[in-house]
Image (cartoon, rainbow, N blue to C red; front, side, top):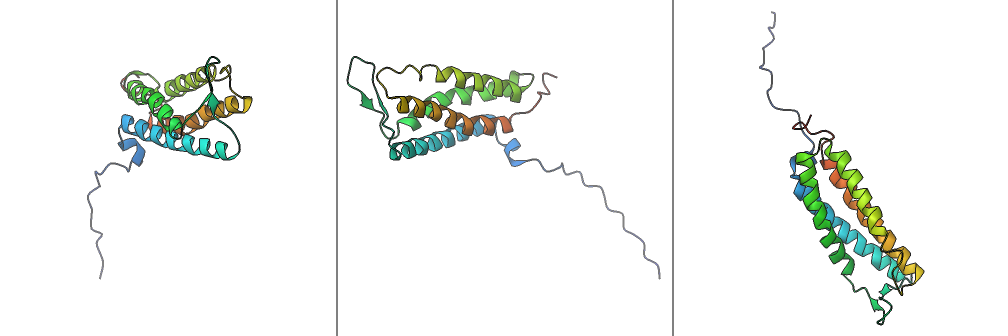
Length: 156
């Protein structure tokens, strides 16, 4: 007795795509900003526990403490820029990922400039604020970069 193999139709199902590539860019950016804000706030609490006082002033008035939740608000406000830039780069940039990384790391470097000469703040406060910028960036930028395409098929 012989057996005959049964022919099966080739599957037309597309190859599995990574989950992140199916999520809209703006949503990935918004999620990354929220995660960055939470991580930065946690960093601030650890810094406070280590003895860093987040007292800042303009030199003419008494120094004020950055309140709890202040880092979340600051990262969320500035992160709104990321939620706008990421989809714009995804749509119009020739190399969205590279454009995103170059632009955002440049903006992080620029954001460190006002931190350095904060009037009437301790050196530990200035350093901790600068590191806070880097913590937020280290969370947000790579997550969004992972979602963006290396090249834009619309601009190829």
